[in-house]
Image: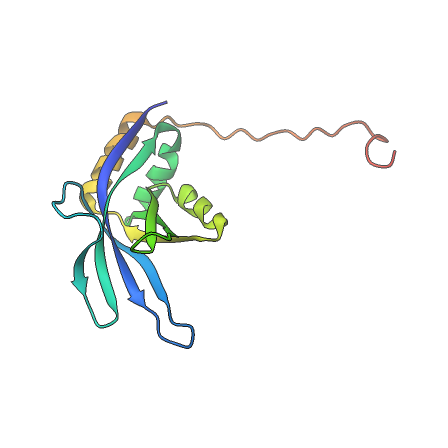
Length: 159
């Protein structure tokens, strides 16, 4: 099974929440090319109630077993990446856990309950790299419907 890691960087936004409970909300906002000269958590832009940070570099793992999911993501015409953030006791209060091009992988990370899982647009330059990986490693696998085991009549629960 082939695997490749595409190095990218992530920008995230920290927004001050208004209302009786206050607090902050974090969300990923953009994927950037790797190799930036900025240190992780360097502010990139600031607004009235929000700040966008360079969160640092992260690798996107592409696995040959998942090429069907990547292909379907690319076929939408507006491919996405799923970014997973988690609260952290260390400054700035959040950490980047994962970035994936696999919709099922991103959705699976929502089950933990404590993760922030959001999509960001996949940049064209990155979509080309994912498309090349799919072209090189995709193998069409036929759908095989499993047959039910009907068992023996009269056997089973309560028999």
